[in-house]
Length: 392
Image 1: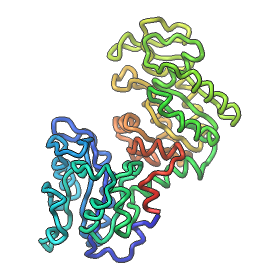
Image 2: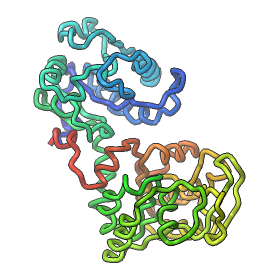
Image 3: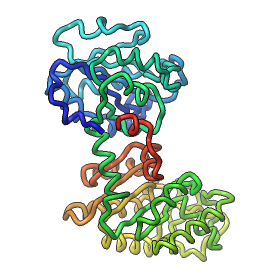
Image 4: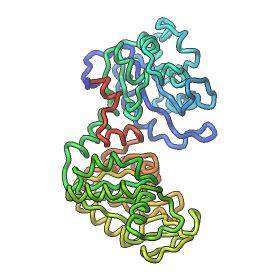
């Protein structure tokens, strides 16, 4: 990929910048600013070089229709305060805008378009729509790795009409994931959670040959326990995944990758209840498994201590209740401690896992924290991402 860092003359150039500002909101307020913080470097980079910036982004899934509840205006206003630069928010029909309508004020530096997914042409990867967007600018920068698994107009087709470059954040994300898939320092450990094993089976199968340890936590570990014949009470689990789990154990054995799953757990009678430590043989029908037990946690922390690379996707328990947050927090703290003496390379991905890290105010204490979700997982599956391919 061509990097925007290597572009020699950005002064007065119009840069169409694709960002992912699909941040969680409640009653019009942003509840997690992680994605906003991550794109500030590319804005500062371009502003410093006197570029004219046209931001394209989205929030939610309006399915090609105007939805005032999914307006980007609150995000634009929030971003304006963050970068301390005036931003011109444009909410008129983008199909009626012409190049000469933009940057009429000489001092204007940043324009922010309304939700690009208000236009059906975006998700159709429409060529004419892409060509129209391209007419506004001199070059295109994709700094939205988390959208790069989508074949959308402002991610893929637009690269056919403008010189196109990878942004700072996108480059950082790809390089971080390369370090846990190609440029690996062993021993490498993957901690993987989530409720459904079937949604991550391709990730697991692609990673196992590269791993020394794969640790199953959260709802996914319940599937393993059930497969092994243990009672899991009312705990979250997935039906009909025995064949998948059997395959995971067979692949792991063939590649000398150790599978770790809970030896003891914390249970509750509900997600808002109190925690009780139980061995696997003591779980009864009305128990919910909601966190790792102390023996399991000690074992996982020891594995992390002896690892050179850690990939973490999925919290260890129901961390929303402090009674069941210890497993996730202790895993995070162990990685942080190893990071501080530069004895581990750590990549964290997935919305819930990022939320755990945010609760500890520890984003900067990991080598890389990915907010990419689907793109993160598809990259780990070994898939070619359309948005990355379009930049090559």
